[in-house]
Image (cartoon, rainbow, N blue to C red):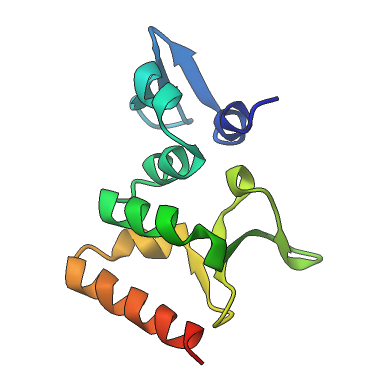
Length: 126
């Protein structure tokens, strides 16, 4: 199965009327993306849209994804490497820092994101 469809299954997105929706218990149905976006973008674009991350973050991680390892947390085994579509976190290879998508959502000032990127990149020069 295509990674994009695995991603939609993981987040239990519903497909109807040429769009993908999130419909969780005790919340309203809301649009995540349309089919046209789903078809033209990559896994990073979809994953970051689902996690409500801005385009600056999408561009940075697209350009630097090889510097990160997609991981998720398992209560028995700790952080384990997974395919990008299944990631809940990104582990920066050079620093060992683990970035949670929810943490990335909290960075709303562009300069703060640039500061984070600069700090991460400082480990790569060592």
